[in-house]
Image (cartoon, rainbow, N blue to C red; front, side, top):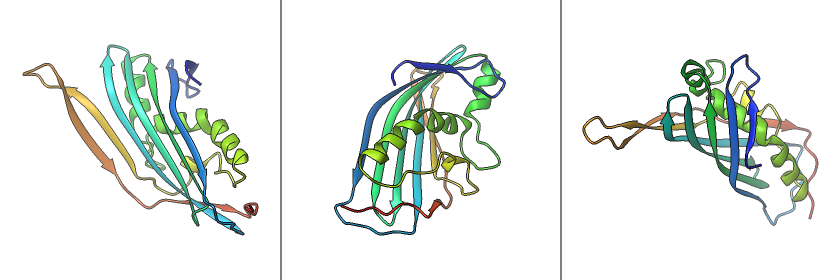
Length: 176
């Protein structure tokens, strides 16, 4: 998925270049018969560089089922290019679900990979709209601002924590 550049479909002239660096899916060794699953999501965005009209970030996304049937862990980088006002808009938190708009864009671009991994390890897959649910997710946003005295990056972190989970009703049974 490296070099998966594309326009963001929200009326802006932004370009996203997404690269998955590490991808893991695991299934517990236990046979589970479940009627529904909840998905706990932990996400992290960390700004690694910023220039005029461009910002590069690292992302991490962990999705864990409840009960513990499967875990998905994806890390990567995304470069956002465009006008500064549009970049700031996509880095902002969506007031409806408290998820950074960029994280929702990342999830929508990597969802097909998560779906295929779930099928490959024979577990129910999370919903395509998992990040758009009414539930709030713990999102950690980290940015690097320039220290005016040294010119080197100065790390700044903001955490937005809340309850998690979206149910996958009538999820298929998971058997050995």
